[in-house]
Length: 411
Image (cartoon, rainbow, N blue to C red; front, side, top):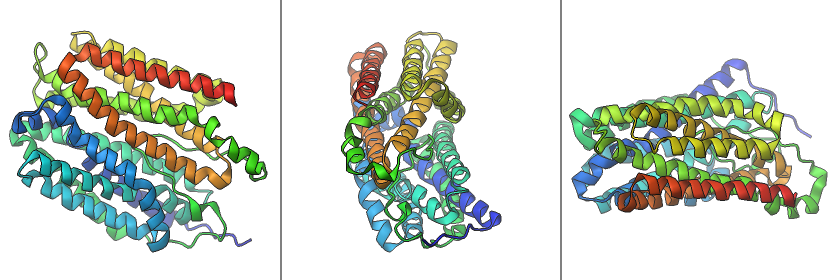
């Protein structure tokens, strides 16, 4: 067996920083429209559900494209696909403010989602090839941090720029920031290193959701067909969490801008965008999720995290702004912990020969849930209000809990 020589630490840092910059660029662009959905709705005369399509079509297109793009990267090179991805998504971001109609805007967002899939579906596999297994956890951690920071910066930047510049200027400001990060990544990202023949890296299609963690699997290659036959049943729980919990989370944040801008709160866009500072709680909770899972086990840890998410969402039903802010902080911490545990569960339970495919399916569920759940949630909020939205998302989270408990019994 041929063993790859580990790259120098300096080269590993270069790879990690470049991939983190690409993550900042990609996820800032992907979620930049979220805080300006009320302005988009006013500008194009839309209801909240229709405005939420601005997020839904992009994440939905990403979900559909992530596996085909990962397959393409295996043929043309992962670095090339990542560079194409970040540059194409930035170019579309710079053109978004020029969209003459909402229909054109949606088409552009769908294309942008496909472009972002080139990073989301390839980055983890690129890191596995570039830094080797010994330094992979630190490199993946840097990538996840970049993804999370990018999502938060895109939302905060657009929210603060929307007041003086409108939604056009807000999206342009985020695109300029992303352009700087994308150029840095394109200029510093090292070329692919050839992976070990027959290694998992050759077939890996692991995605890179906005936040979360992945741990080495505990599966044994000797499990063979029996283990592969159990793959579907053993991962129903985390796959369901990826779809339903993400749908609930995105639905609440898509509608948050409308709720905070409406009476009696009537917050300005910049003030309303401060709700996205709650993502800092998500970064901390995802880092702590591994310790929670080690102490309680997969099932109890995941159920606990989902219960915290429900509790936080219920807190937001109050009309007091401090309680609403607390609720968003709690539900964000709960969701990202659940996402990290579910992601790690997939990595741990899938057999080595199918781990890349399982991670790709989880990514597919994650972004399909984001696109569909966020859009449906916007429709419910627009027609029935915040209390009904909390009821809907709590029902989704409860179904996710039931799926986790049923998966435990089937294992």
